[in-house]
Amino acid sequence: MYPPDNSEDLGPYSHTKVKRLSDRAHYDRDSIYQILDEGFVCHLGFIANGTPYVIPTGYGRRGNTLFLHGASANFALAESKRNTMVSVTVTLIDGLVLSKSAFHHSINYRSVVSFGTVAPVEDVEEKKLALETILNHIVPNRSSSTRPPSESELKATRVVRFEIIEASAKIRQGGPKEEPEDIGLDYWSGQIPIEWRYSDPIPSGNSSKELPEKLANLSRPGR
Image (cartoon, rainbow, N blue to C red; front, side, top):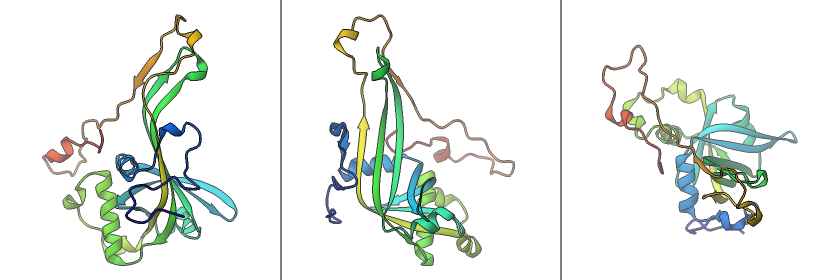
C-alpha cells in the first residue's frame, strides 16, 4: 500500500522504512523535497539483463515528479523504463564529525532514498517543460536567459519521468557521540562543517560584457 497523491507523507513503506537509527528518519514531503531541491546529482538504480546498475545523473523536480535526461541512446534511461520499479537517491554532505574514539567518527548528512516508476516523455511540449525544469534546477530561472532547444536537439535528447511512489529522508546533525569512559581522553573532538558555495563566474570568450546580477549572487535552496 502506498500514499495517496495528497498524503503529507511518502512513507514509511516496505522499501523505505528506516530501521537502523530510525530517529533520523523523515517521511514528510517537505523534508524530502527540500533535500531533492538542494541537490544537483541523483543516483538512478535499476536492473538491466539481471545486472544491477547505479548511475549518477542530473535531474529536476516538479511536484512529485523527477525529470531525468540524457542522449537519445542513453543506456540507463532506456533500461530503467523497462523496470517495474527503480530507485533514485540524493545525498548532501554537511560536515565531518570527529570523536575521541575511532568507532564514533561520523558524517553529518541529509539523504533521500526514493522508489517509483519511470516512463518516457514523448510529448514535445512536456519534453520542453521537463528540460526547462532540469535547467532551472541547475540555475534558477536560467531558461529565461538562454535559447530554447531546437527541434533536432529535442530529438537527440531522451527524457524520462520518475514518479515518486515512496521515499524517506535520513538526516544526521550535531556533534560526536562519546563513550563515558572516553570523555576525559586528551584528544580533540567536534565538528568540521563543510560549506558549499559558488566561486566567481568565469565568462567565456564570446559572453556578453556584463554578468547578470542573478548569476553573480547564485545560491542553492536551503543554503
